[in-house]
Length: 57
Image (spheres, rainbow, N blue to C red):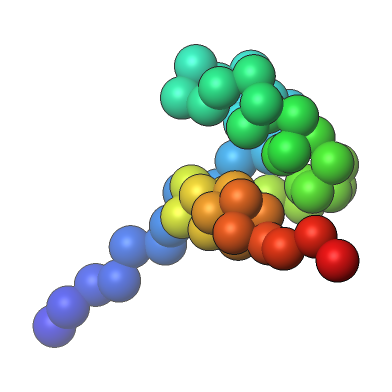
């Protein structure tokens, strides 16, 4: 019998206080993350990557 571990989620505030992100990444997260939601580290890293890859029209 295998157990699935639930991914640990963090709030926007926790990510913004984290030392794992640069000031520029924190600015991006500040605008992309919602105050009342929790996110996994993988979700947040994907948001940052997608934001960096976007094109400006």
